[in-house]
Length: 451
Image (cartoon, rainbow, N blue to C red; front, side, top):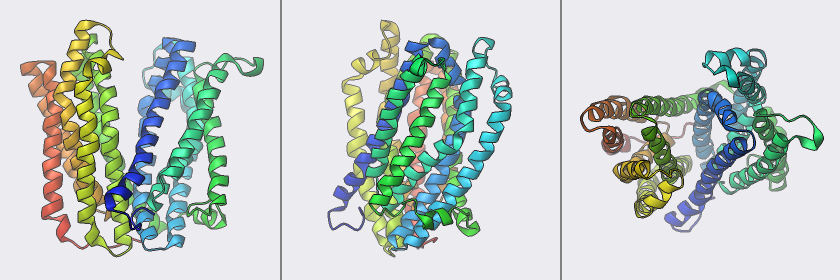
């Protein structure tokens, strides 16, 4: 596995990191292509119907990603210590509680999907389609949770290749099944917007089956054997540890989501051109941030495995490698973004005035993704030892007390550019505070195994 290999740390880091980055990019592309199917084969109302359910879906995904973060850290520590029984105990407990929660969502969705969609203020002309999509998505939420959790937890044992292969399987199935469902399979009635949800169900089932046979054939540490299935009866102590790390991770995602909604509200006040520019810049930013987020996860897993082996002193080298990777990979993408900004913006925008606006906004914010990545390296290192509330407090402060007020103040004085100037201000604050807490407080502590 990556941390125990005799190869230089930066090489191990890349071996672990690159497949994870590819997975993130592939997942994002899959979502984009799925929306293209809906928009081109059904129409703009189809996109609107799916978009209605997005805030709810994001909340569910934030929860399961938080659980996966907590589980991955604990699995990393147990795996680093060579305790494979504990690895499966943590994974089984996490999957068991996640499926229990997903079952509640499924029951709620089967009974109240229509009421939920109405409560979201869905326009009447897309109410039926949005309800159908939401109902199918919620009823089969256990499958969605299982795919996300199982693939994410594999990172804890140093495996990023299998999750990438699983996502390739999932994507290929979805790209074939979605248009077939939309067109009407074998002469059956067309399923409309719900086609995308049903295609996701098919992809999830087949991907989980592929994972089952693939992991068993390779005697993988997270293979679905009897020991794993027995561990799915939640262990109270392990569950508390998973939640202790996972809940702050979920809250961090939700804080960022709330902030984006506030900033989007400010942008919308400048008209549809500004909103279009916001969407285009956001698309480019999301791809540039993929390395930063992946590097943070890598630092967390490498650090957890080092702590599990009783070699917490290696965390300093892991952090240094993460910072260098962030400088080269995230910084490199940022440079490419500046060099090719006209072409990148032209992928989304055709009107010259809006294109010029979007390019100017991208230039304001793009460089600060490096600072964001540096901040997440320090928070990822602290998370590897189970320290989660302080990094969450720092990130929340930077977003809620710095970014949002800065955006409001600057937008009133310099216009829409002020909204985007708030990002570098917040990221700089986040970087300085996370680094200071890591160097002055956390590094002086002894990182001990939690499991």
